Length: 203
Image (cartoon, rainbow, N blue to C red; front, side, top):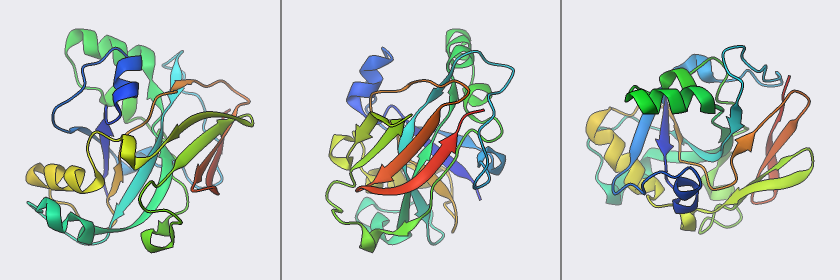
């Protein structure tokens, strides 16, 4: 199982980090060790002083595919959830300044908690897939697929040109605006169409 993450997929988020808005999907990989075991707290790593939350919709691939045409991409995923792409923002900035890969800032252990997956057919409104996240009870991030630069199907078609997708792979589809730092004692709760699918305590 591999984790494929899409960067800068919401215009407002790209702008809040002062990044260019991409004309084709930007993606990077995480190892399976980035998954946070269910029920575990997320422990702040000692190599960063600026860990940020990024709430995202997550797709689960249901069959193997390569060079998938966009019009057929919907056949390759049937479950969805929400997840967090924890980012060491200080390290990411250092990597960007040196023109180096983002993995030290993105792919570290337990950096990608993911919630309970549900069938896409059970989502109340599949035209929006509205999701949001609260921190200590206050809503701080929200988004819909209508705000995405690249659709689910476009992402899958594009990524599969370069990497074979296999059953069980996860695709983190990008974060909307509202990213920010976390500290020990925070609790993050993520919802999809009003249903709570993930809760993570920061330690």
